Length: 309
Image (cartoon, rainbow, N blue to C red; front, side):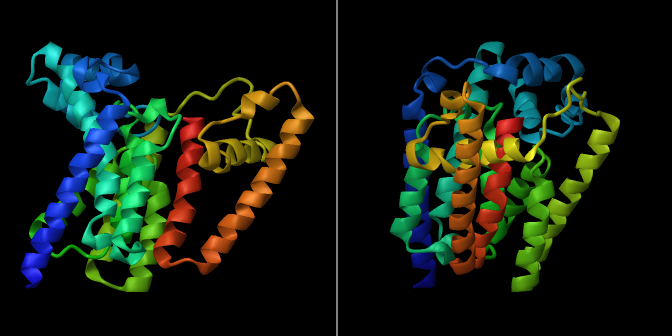
C-alpha cells in the first residue's frame, strides 16, 4: 500500500511538473519556437566554453563567483551543432524554472501544508507578472536554482536512492552557482540543529563547502569598485526592500521610477513600506513553522541580490 501511494504521488508530481513546464513555455513561446542566446548566454558562457575548453571555463568565475549550472550547460552544448546550442540553453532554463514548484508539490514538502496550497503556490511562482528577465533564459536561471536549493534544505529526508541523488546533485550545483551558498549555509545549519538527522547534516556540509569557494573566488578575482563607491546606505536598503521585495507582491511591478524625481517622497515611502513590510514578516516569522522561517530569512536576501547584481 505504501509503495502504491508513493508511485501515485510520483505520478502526480511528474504531471504537475509537465504542467508547470508548459506554463513557463506559454509565457514566452519563443524560447522553444525561436531559441536564441540571451545576454551572457552566448558571448560569455558558450563562447568561453568553445574557445578555452569546457574544463577551463568550468572553473572561471564571473562577477566574483562560480556559475556551475551555466558552465555545465555550455559544455554540453559543445556536442551539438551551433544552431542547437540556444535551444539547449532555453530548455535547461525552463527546466530549472519548473523544478521549484514541482518539488514544492512533492510529498517531501508536506510539512508546508496541504497539496492544494502547495499547488497554488506553484501556480503563483510560474505566473508571477512582470518578471521577463527571469523567464526562460539561462543567464538568470540561478535565481530559480537558489529557490530550489532552499526547498531541498527544508524538505523531508529522501526515501529513495534517486531522491537522495537528486538532493546531492542539485544542491551541489546550487552551492556552486551564484553567491547563495553563503546565505543558505547558516539556514541549513539551523535546520540540522533542530532536526538532528543525517541528511540535514549532509546538506549543510555541501552548502558550507560551496560557501567557502566564494571568498577564494573574490580574493583571486576581485570585482572592480565604482569610483563613486557602491552607494550603500540605509535609504538605499529601504528603497530596495520596499520596491523590489514588498511592493511587487501585490501588483508585480517596481514603482520606484514614479518617485525618482521626488527624493523626499521616495524616502518617506521607502521607510514606511520597509517598516510595514518588516512588521508583517516579523509576525509571520513569530507564528510560522521552521520551513516558513527559513524562507523568510532567505527570500529578502535573494531578492536584494537580484536587484544589485
